[in-house]
Every structure is written in C-alpha cells, then in structure tokens.
Length: 291
Ligand code: ADP
Ligand code: MG
Image (cartoon, rainbow, N blue to C red; front, side):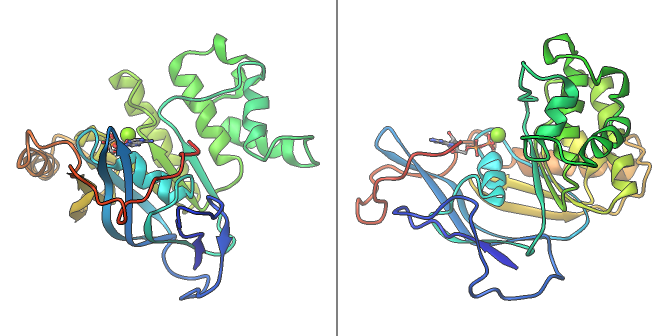
C-alpha cells in the first residue's frame, strides 16, 4: 500500500504519495484508513468532522456511505482522495492505483464540448494517440455518443452528470469516489444512472465508494453500507441482497427501515462532535483547505 502524505499541518503536499513504511504489496484493499482524524476550526470551535475512522475498502464492489448532513461524509471522501490531509492517522492506497472523483455537481468546463471535458480526465493538454479512441469508448459506455459535440450549457442535468462520470471513467480508475453524484436528479433519472453505473461495474471490477443521503440508493447500490454519524462509523453492513435488486422485497425494505432507525436513533444530534474550548496546543491553527 502507498500512504498519502500524513497531515502534519506544517507541510506535506495533499495527495503526494510516499511508500515509506508500506505495510503490504499490490494485493489487498483498494483503500485503507487508519485512525484518521480531521478537524475544522469554525467560529472559535473545533469541529471533529472525521473522528477516528478505521476502514478498509475492498478492491472491487460498491461501498455506500450514508449519514445525516454534517456527519463527515464529504470530508471522509476527500481524505480518501488525498484532497484533504488528516490531522492524524494514515490513508493508504494501492501502489500505482488510479483514482477518480465524481462530485455532486458535474463541474464541467463551459468552454469545452462534452468530448473536451471527458478528455480532461486524461490529464488535459494535447490528446495523445489513442486518447480519442478511449474517449469515444467511454462516451458510448455512459450513453453520450450523440452529445459529444455539445457544450455543457446545452445539456440537461442527467446528461451533464453522465459527462462527469465519463470524465471520471476515462482514466480507467481502480477506485472511484462519488459524492452524492445523482442527488440533484429526479427519481426516474437517478434510477437510470444507478443502473448504468451497475452495468459499467459488470464490465470492469473496480472499487466504488458512493456517498448518498438517500437510503434507498444506498441499499440499491451497496455491496456494503457504512453509516456515519458525527465523524464516526456507527454501522458497517454487508448487503446480502442479489442483483438485480427488488427494492420492494421484504429484505430490502427491512434493511432500509433498519438503516433509518440507526440514523433516527441519534435524531436531533446530527451535528458533528465539537470541542467548545479547544486547547491551542492540541489544535494548532489549521491550514487552509485546498478544496
Ligand atoms: P457531510 O458531507 O456529511 O454533510 P461534511 O464532511 O461536509 O459532512 O462536514 C462535516 C462537518 O465538518 C460539518 O460540520 C461541516 O460544517 C464541517 N466542515 C466541512 N468542511 C469544512 C471546512 N472546509 N471548513 C470548516 N468546516 C468544515
Ligand atoms: Mg457532503
């Protein structure tokens, strides 16, 4: 495993990789977090957004992450991506593995066509030989063929999010991190994109960590479901349902109800844990975030 540079607050480049002290080989999990903590200083208080998370994510399959707003889902994902550094603890990824991130909003460059935006996933700059073939392949995969020359402001929300997914997939990632990618879409479209994601995963084994606040989505997609509360994983559930998944089946309904209960069991306490009077020595001034 390769460890992303540990957050030392004083230095370190987010996402820079170091293999010093690497505990294992190319095999094993796609991602490992060890005792990861991440705080934010807000208004003189320190919010513990991620509060001691230990986690291993397998090399294939979908892990869905649910939790109330403010429970640390996005922070966890960004730590996994190396977009944020932990205050303490370590984040490991497999050596040479490729990672892509899909945000809630498509974040397309308005001056580029769909094709140009997908090409960005390969690193931008001049397209190398073979790049365009790869882009075309991905356009077909995510159902964008007829939109390849369109600009983002000519696209519906669903098509724009498909383009974002294409940009993420074009680099053939081993680990795909998705932060509520379909939450802005209406229900039928969301279901279509969920099904498309599942079909894509049938073609290539990759590891997906998918954040959602929609329990039905978490159950429909997840091989494993994590429930996050106040920066901590409070439930880790292996999903025993087959595919295609009948969301009206008794077992799917029971799982959804039981997840709702886990979330409700702390209703009213959805904000992350915080220290009202942080000790300056324990929490020195935090660096600006890069994202
Ligand atoms: P979620 O994605 O589950 O809604 P987040 O990870 O975005 O939760 O946030 C967890 C907590 O950390 C929230 O209280 C949020 O306000 C706080 N937080 C997240 N990012 C920042 C930041 N850049 N600056 C200050 N506080 C932040
Ligand atoms: Mg979030």
